[in-house]
Structure formats: structure tokens, C-alpha cells
Image (cartoon, rainbow, N blue to C red; front, side, top):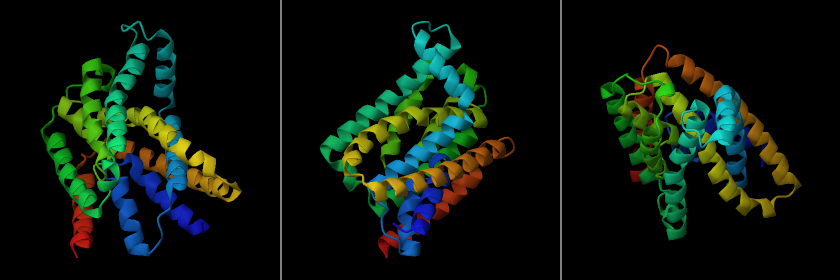
Length: 265
């Protein structure tokens, strides 16, 4: 695959993976604007590995706490153990729903430009309502196992392409009353086991077909996705100190309208 194609896909995926703007919407729009071919499953896995590395590095202190908590998970009074258990609980619903969706065969039927366009638009508006109406009473330290389960159920909606995994989990957190930066922080931490689970499932499918050229392309894609995702995380977490999620909502509305215009014309 041409290096420029790899870099473009990696940067688009890296930037949009953690911003609440739907990475799948951008990856569908990309070939319509540029004429580029679909990047394929191998590169999909590679860019997700890159974005996973970025979120682990950016939230390395929280990741270290969660890892430490795994070894004392029976002690719920310990905050590290509670964080680790919360991440496990939050991941279970989307893993079960994802497996059922894949086994049913409906996962491919959802990957139409119409579905992505409507999901980008509708769930952008849902984020706006939750952000504007949700209280500001909780911080990440208040994350309970009940809230982890609730956010995990919200995360199941991310199986609809265009919803945005980060966007829907942030929506759930804001609806539960978490402050904006804490909602984003919890959503990003929840992405780690989710990406690991989906990456392991898909990665097993592509590992046997890898050759030297595919390995080289994957490495390039992973590196650029890592750098783009790290920059996007830094930008969003800094921005949330002073503004709401409204700029992302407005962007989603515009993107959704463009996708629907392409779909119906």
C-alpha cells in the first residue's frame, strides 16, 4: 500500500478514535473525497494498536493503578481494585453484544453509509442534550461499579457504526453527572480493554495472512496512528478545561448531513 495512503488513514483514525466525532464516519467519507481504496482489515488492526498505545501512555498513571488493582480485586474498598473491577464490568456488555452481533451476521449490514450518517447525526444530538442537561456532581474518583455498568451499557451502542465509542460513553458519563474532563477520562480508560478485546478477536483473523509487506505497512500505520491519537487526546483534555462538547456536536451534525447527502444522492 502506498505510504501516503497509510499515513492519511492512520492520521484520520488516530485523531477521530478518541474525539467524540465517529471514526467510522470519517473513514467512510475519506474514499468519497479522495478516491482511495479501503485500507483493509490488517491496517484496521494496526491503527487500533497505535491508538491503544497512545491512550495507555497518556493515562499511564491511571493504567498503572488499574493494573495494580487487578492483584487486589477482591478488596473493593481499595480504589485501585475498584477501578480495575469497574473497567472489567464496563467492558463485559459490549463484548457480549459484539460477539452476538458478529455471530448473527448483522454486523456487516450496519456498515452502510446511511446508518453511519444517521448515527453520527442522532448520537451527536444525544451528546449535546446529555452535556447540557447533565449535572456536575461527580469526578472520576466517584466512579462506582453501578456507574461502570451503566456506562458499559451505553458503550454497547457504539457497535452501531457512526455512534462513536468515546462519544457514547462520554454521553453516558455526563448523563450520570460526571464533570466533562472526568467523563472523557473515564471514557478513554474504558477504551483500553474494549480495544484490546476487539483487537484480539480481529487480530486472530489476520495474523495468519501477514507477510513482510503487510507487516511493514502495519508498523507505519501504527506509528502514525499513535502520534495522531496522542495529539488528539492532549488537545481534547486541554480544551475541556474551558469549553463544552458543543464544538464536537456541531462538527458531528455537519458530518452527518454530508454523509446522508452522499448516501441519498
